[in-house]
Image 1: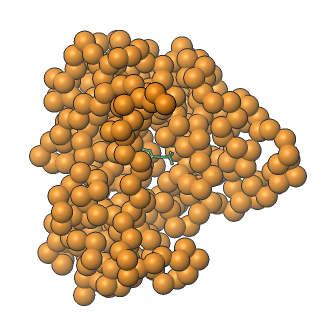
Image 2 (image 1 turned 180 degrees about the vertical axis):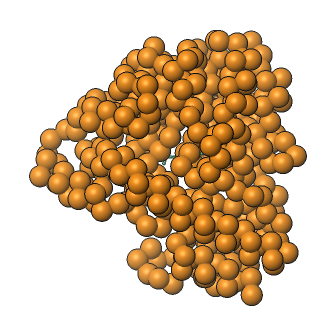
Length: 352
Ligand SMILES: *Cc1c(COP(=O)(O)O)cnc(C)c1O
């Protein structure tokens, strides 16, 4: 069979390592899983009710255009219309849909360490990924990214806040960067952790999207909305790009329950803001404890923290975290998802 040789260099998703002696039973309380930046609380009650309600329609295809969901997302981003909103089976699918609109061959410039999926997604669609190292403060280095642009550059991804370092860039810096780029380069702002950033100088990229022809922001229901299992993400895009993305999109990829749950969750901004406040308080508590224990960490603006400790330290109290070396950090670092208060108590008990 003639298959594409580039696929030999695409590693399948490398899931969090589970040490042999720890066989994780997802239904049990024996281990706390703080490996994948999910929210321990799951969906809001309104989203749960919406999921149940869709059961009676499960024999039918979902709304192909996801209209109520796109309207709910547009309402939350003043100035945008549903025509500026594309949805996907997780923002991962939206990222792939975006890469599919780009001319090939070509390159996608990405920060590193960052979300490993950028690399495999680029290769699968026939693009190269060019990695640009974070700056000395673990931040996306916009000057170095700008310097990496060539005639081959089709897109630049700014993961903001960046996973796995947890650092962010204010909107004014992102805007200057976008304006300095050639218009032919697509700027993808991956804002999966949008709701966890406190600084008012961060928010508002939808305004930049509206004023531009080449800036797209992607967000997800997998994190603060607690809907990772239902796979819903979205992109905010200038109209022309949104239309192109829909043309590459697999029809009906966002299922009915996910659409309904996401729309219901989007309708509860107070509850979502309350969750993100709780997660920020817990993040500060965890970071303070890391500091008091003499551990180095990268001050985070997300629901996870990069810390200079091996996963084995936390396994003592039955807590699983992600090993740094799987994410481009050196051995001896771990990415710790902030859990609920009791899960974090257990995490911190390992420091004692
Ligand atoms: C979690 C995450 C996503 C979201 O993925 P989904 O496909 O929406 O679940 C996207 N980008 C980054 C950087 C992430 O950490």
